[in-house]
Image (cartoon, rainbow, N blue to C red; front, side, top):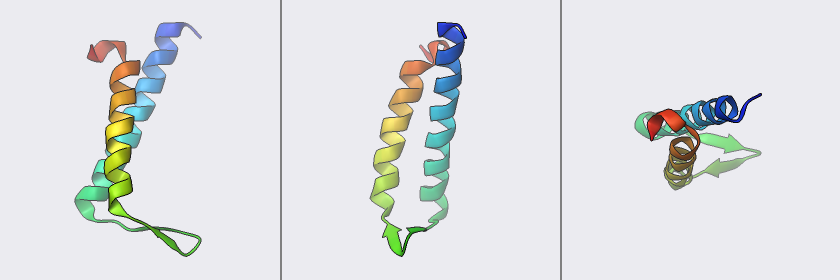
Length: 62
């Protein structure tokens, strides 16, 4: 796989992950893993990190 193709695939993956966290925040969905509730602020941080990674990996966004 060429570097540009890999970067595009990784960028789209991170973009979809960021979108999933935005939707979780928008709809107020709760996530429970082994009887531990994941707070909403974790999704806020995840949106920032995955959004940055998507922007950095996707050459078409720059």
